[in-house]
Image 1 (cartoon, rainbow, N blue to C red):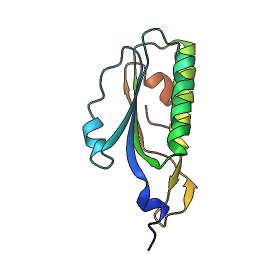
Image 2: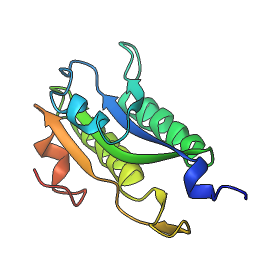
Image 3: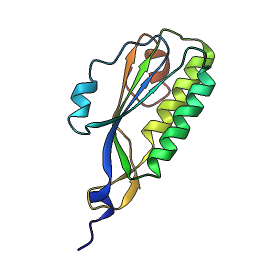
Image 4: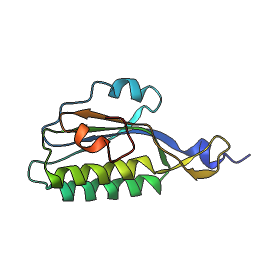
Amino acid sequence: MRASKRETRTEVTVVIIERGAKWPSNVDELRRNAPESVVLAQSPDESPDDFAARVQSRLARLESSDRVVRSAVLAAGPATGTEMVAARRRMAHALRWLRVDDEIGSESWARVPLAFTGGGASACAAGSGAPA
């Protein structure tokens, strides 16, 4: 008997860390449900726009692979400028509307549990549908 698509997909936790952010304290707890992690960290010379584009590209590749995102953390750095806030919103939006497998194995659009941490998180949470 062939395994269903749902049974062959690996569950992952996505951790997005902006430049200057601290490692999120809740990652270990999130990894209990999805032990494989994908960590995306903003490099020192990477603009907020380029970082958001890289995050969106990586999430698109994850979505088309054999992995399914079960939870995510966006660790905000101290920057709160217009460009950084716009980039945060793009990343949060991409995370919140990933295609996931439902309980019976068919694909649907659903919200991925998303936590915001860090100094600049409140500057983005209002526009993302996530709590500040």
